[in-house]
Image 1 (cartoon, one colour):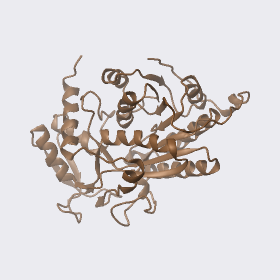
Image 2 (image 1 turned 180 degrees about the vertical axis):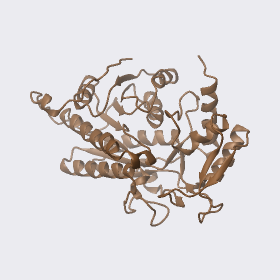
Image 3 (image 1 turned 135 degrees about the horizontal axis):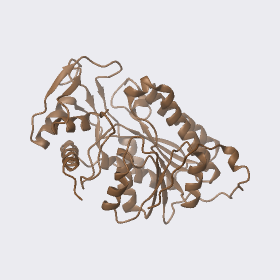
Image 4 (image 1 turned 90 degrees about the vertical axis):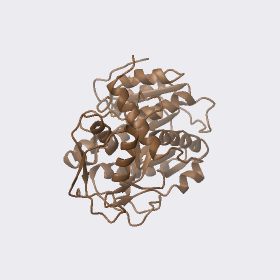
Length: 367
């Protein structure tokens, strides 16, 4: 494992003397060399677990702002192939460029960025700096290295309040918080980039609600601080780390009054990224795809399923609705099935069981 630490952000003038390289074909490489930014986070680590089995050469850049170094060691335990880790920030254009060149990267999966909806309303400048500026830095480095295959981690938050359901990729975009707007701004930048040069191949994957953990139980959703998402919070309540679950709103026009969301198993989501890489091997330009199951579950349905998985009653209380929350949100998934040849395979029960398995592993780690 290689570890390099970047200290300062650099600028494009450092590249004035770098020669330009001839354009290369974007046909599927016999051996993909994939860079994944933000690869030690919850979603990134599970994508890496699949990448490392599919392809021999996987490189991560991550600043560990919302993840832990032990994730790298755990990834090494569950994969037959090695991993190269670079400690640094994607906004360091020089570092990203050097990483691409030194590791002969020909495909990038971009997840690095901040991801809390609630925190984004309090710290919008940080979100635009990390998410938007980070993507621009990555694109500059990729352009200089003549690497033009990119899978971007987008979000269903770009749609805003649903005008109809299920949400398909043609639904109008109208993000209602800084996090969602940062993702939408990035999509617009990527669309313009792809249209500026026919060599670019870009897929934006709009995630719905990733939950669950790797079947090994040694990587999962382990946020720094208080969990911002429902499933890890549920797991911590079940483990006795938190007193109860707060459920915001029980008066929505849904089957049981609680909000309905499209939950997708993290391993299904990870496999969707491999399908997107394959798709880009044959398709240029800019593309958007929903990654969800196409079915919504209420908070109480998820809670009941998790209680079965852990064998415990989970204390909870109902609070008032939060501003900006919607009653229902779930995906139309036909486009991903048709063009990526991908569909989710795992059930809500498997999502809950794997999440609880990971929580138990945190309490009783194996050496």
